[in-house]
Length: 291
Image 1: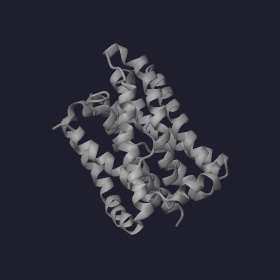
Image 2: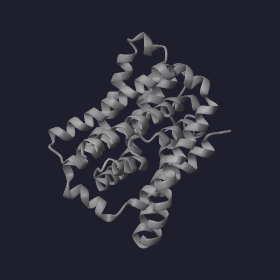
Image 3: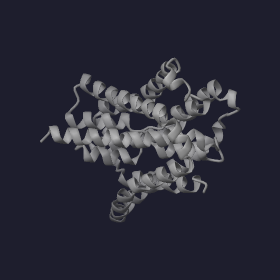
Image 4: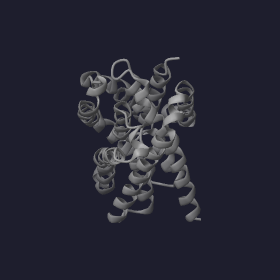
């Protein structure tokens, strides 16, 4: 089974669902509360890829990790780090009693900004790591794919919500319930197809991806604390900066128009597993401490 036929509809539905949750007031949030929005975007767009690259360089000196840092896995790790947000982060923000409006705004803004930053960063990464295995990034095709699979579904959902709010609310109520099961289905199918590679590399890549999650969530918490944001804003930034769009990373890795290489998607699958475990634990702990 070619997983691209599962990934594409899931990513499109997730982006459409994000558009359904968007309201004009979410964009006014940028002007009304620029500090948390700015901090969140800097953490997602700038710091996250830098932290991932730093971990890769550091891990290359450690025997436990160095054997797993093949060029394809390096590309896959950086692809995850360059794919911030996703509608699942909005669900986790809601579960953590965070600022859902801020979460939606950050997800929408990062989805648009990464249209340009992701191709630029990944072009540099593949030039550095991909030559050894003859992997190159078709920047133009990646940009067009992201427009079709991300921008257009978000825009369609936003327009529907703007002019048919009641219908949008009903559709959103359904889609937000199937978002997580859809991601679980994707991870399960991919795990079954590539279980030997995933099991063989899980010890090193699983630990590396967990370190990435912990480092980025810690950065989110630290930046929010330094900026003296509210508790709801802090919890949202921890989730938004720490949670990546695994579906987008898998789509780019598997797409015939871009990398067309499912091995590059392995770090995203492992990341998705560890991300949900870490962030569910975070939500449970924060909710317990507030009781």
